[in-house]
Structure formats: C-alpha cells, structure tokens
Image (cartoon, rainbow, N blue to C red):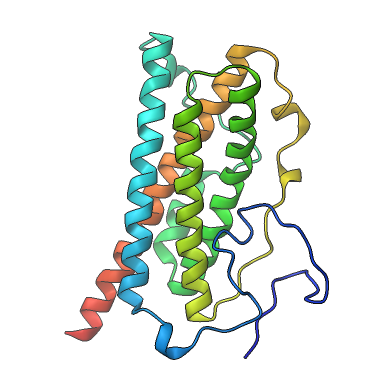
Amino acid sequence: MTKQPLGTNPSKSVAHPPWVNPCNLPIYISPTKESQPSVRDIYEKITRRASTTKGLSENIRQQFIKFLGDEDFESGVIDLRLEWLPEVQAIIEEFEQFEEPDALRKSFKYLQYFAVGLEQINLDQVLHDGSLIDEFREIEDHLRQLLCELQLGMWYREISPEDHIGQEIMAQEYRDISDDSRRLIRDYLLVRDLSQLVDQIKSLFLRLDSSIETTTL
C-alpha cells in the first residue's frame, strides 16, 4: 500500500516547510512490518518529547517574567491569546475523547500552528538582537522532534494526516512588529499556549498507553 501526502502530486517536487515532513519520511513507501516499533514505544517517545518541550517552554516563560520584573504581568494577559493559534482551553475536553487516530492527527496539526509562529520568532530574535536566540532555537528543534515522533506514529500506524498548516495562517500584522513590547507579548503568548498544549498531548498519550495496559491484563 502506497501513501500520498494530502494535496500533492507525487510526480512533482515541492518544497515544504519543515513542519510538514519533519522526519523527511519516504512518504510514498509504507513501512515494513519488521521495522515497526510497538504501539507502546510510539506513545512513550511522544510523551518523552512532549515533556521535554514542556520544560523548555516553561523555562522561556519564566525568563520572560524575570526580564519584565512585573509580578502582575501574567495575570494581566491571562485573557489574551493569539487568534490564529488553537485555543488550548477550548480543546481540552476534545483531547479527553480522542483515540489513537485523532490523537496523532490532531496533535500533529495543532503543533504545526506553533511551528509557524516559532519560525517567525526565531527570525525576529536574529533581526532584533534578541536575548533568547539559543533558547528559541532549542525549543524549535525539540518541537520539530515531537512533530517527527507524531509523524512516525501516523506512518507506522497507516494513519493519514489532516491538511497541513501553512505559513499563511500567521498574518503579516503578527510578523512585522517593530515595537519591542508588542513583540514580547506575542512571543510570551505563544510560549504559554505551547506549554499548555504539549502538556495536554503528554496526558493524552499517557492515557492511551495506560489503556494498553488495561486491555492486556
């Protein structure tokens, strides 16, 4: 059984952003049964990557607070969000109902939104001599690794992804920000929501992993 990425023609060479095929998988070739890891291994790798990404995002969030020196900052922006990102609080109940196919598909798709934003943040860190260049590069790298584990999970389990998220979801008004304080708030909101999302993904795959234990007892 061959596989085709959604919306592409296998006879054409198309350059994709890194979050579309983060593992550089041979998409038109199915994995052999001998090469497939266990379902538990797939879930454990996803939860481990999600945990690492959570820790890195929390570290950056704390650095924002320390830099600002304002104890009321977080409470002041608690109701603010970037409208083009998934609303994490609104999808928590959705996550609680997911089984494997939607767990892999939705986690992969939602994280792609954040990959788009991190690409721009890393560019701005360079252009504006940001103080968190290394930290944002590291979290972008680990997010890509988490996306890779989710992509591998879909590939091994023969689950087709949803339509991929493109750079156009982040409008120019969120990219071309000359004001340092506005750019800082944008970056903080993205990191805050990413931390919440990867925490939900970790909990989701821990639940799926525990259901394997239940069914094998």
